[in-house]
Amino acid sequence: MTKRIVSVILSLCLGLALAGCGGAASQPSGPRDYAAILSGARDADTNSETVIFTYKDEAEKEWGAQGAYAGDLDADSMEDQAEASLMMLGLDEDDITEAAFSVSLMNVQSYGVAIVKPAEGKTEAVKEGLSGFIEAQKAAQQNYLADQYEIAKAAKLEVMKSGEVVLVMCKGQDNVLSAIKAALK
Image 1 (cartoon, rainbow, N blue to C red):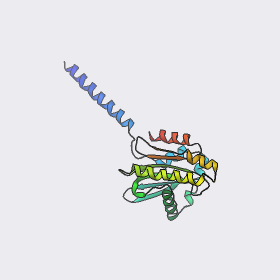
Image 2: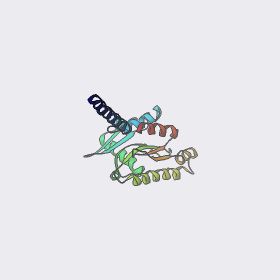
Image 3: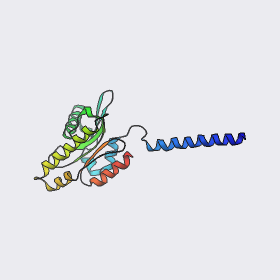
Image 4: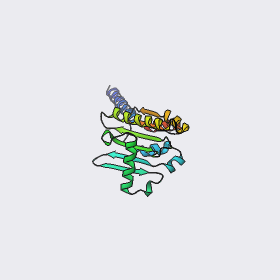
């Protein structure tokens, strides 16, 4: 009889351990490297041409940059360009806790990719800002560059199950979005 009780207890412990492992597998472990996710989703040419800026609001606001000419930027220039890109995307620092983003600051290309982790209760504000960016790009290109207008018109804006808001406005956007989604699972 005691062997049977020990067996039942061990079975219950094993079941709980497996359930715990299953739960852990569905949740992300630790912080995600949004810049690496964007870089991995883009092609080599885009990574060599367009900087990915990062933002983290921890104890102190932290800016970062990687790819393209990022190594040539001093801290002030990096922060200035990152803030300009963030403003162009229609985002406010108070609405986000972390982000990686890349945009074309020139009006001859409809290009913007971003992964944004909204601050608590700010998902709608982030979506509105990024939607405004999409609309501004469409308006800027509609009568100017037909191919860039088509890219802006087909832009993707989605909220992931994990809570990040993702913007993809670029050539091959379906592939880029699929790669980002796979990395955020």
